[in-house]
Length: 191
Image (tube, rainbow, N blue to C red; front, side):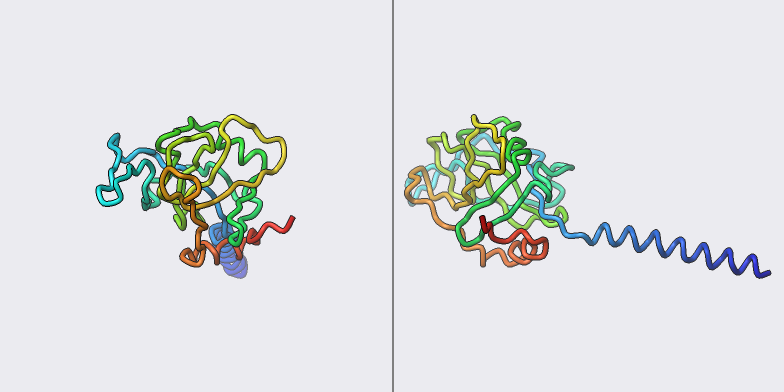
């Protein structure tokens, strides 16, 4: 009789321990950057008839189901995000993962910064050599230069084809992103 009770207690403790360890892993906050399964909404270029400009990379929203299965850039490869200066610092490995993608000078490459695969911020990886202009959030990179050490990239809101019109992103409009990067200790690049 005592053996049955001891066995039941052992099984309950074992189940509790497995359940707790799974919840602990699932509850760990991660900031990661995902690309989308399909990068282009359409082959048509939007034209703003009021401003009389073409919109090559407009604002977009994304659902979790639209993200690729695995992140392009992992939590470990994102070293910090400075919301004051608009800088993201990536490890060389993280940056070089962007270079593995086929660059699109006209449309950029859509991405989403996510917490535990929940989209918080969308934008485009945008080549600094592109003569086109985005009208949405961008992380600018040089698609011909591999990195051998950590690298800082600009995050900005595009405002058409003229780079002078780029705007600083007000990250206060993304409170969940701010909270998440603070929780994982990646806020502000102090070096």
